[in-house]
Image (cartoon, rainbow, N blue to C red; front, side, top):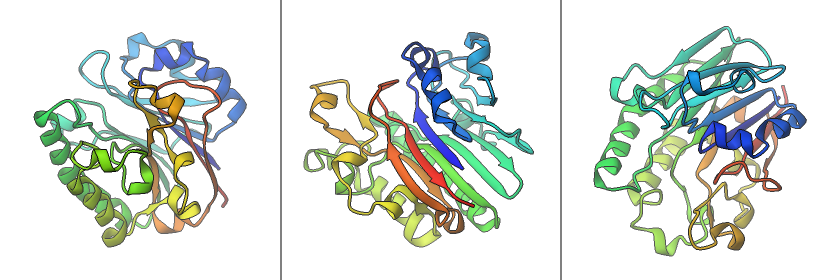
Length: 257
């Protein structure tokens, strides 16, 4: 089973950059998307349901903002939109598709980089999302949570770690939250399980400033985080950089059942 996660930074923009031609060649089983930046009325037939796929979305109430989606070859048994928390759900940040004993989630955690108010909201979302993370891992289901977590966990996960210690995305509190997710609750960072020592090649996001892409001054903020049994099924992972569909790169992981 091939699962792809990608922050689109606008589904219409990504489509214009060749996203759907690329997806067709990938033949992935499930594609998790974040930052759709569109409403249902904005999407073409191809965007809603690409050939060979069922499409599901959780849109933000604000136009041209946030939103998540999932494409799957197989029709899910159930789809859950949102966490049941009004202010989080209004931003379209969580959608879960269930296939038998497998749950695949597309998640978009907030960024706090625009100021103190959004950073406070980010911390609030992290705190209120934790019970859901505990419930999912205790459910006995195989679960993969794909998405833009907007946190680089360790120094190896971003180029300029020394200069970002006080910046959103690499704050000590954010990093400690992820550590707790892995070390205390038991979730697994699938890419790091497969490739514990990679640095430059692990990045999934590059700022549009200062030639960050050209110089590979990147961050690893896109993850597939899984329950232990599901993580053990992962056999290979890659970050696709030959084409650019957004300021993020697709994270691809293959699981063998």
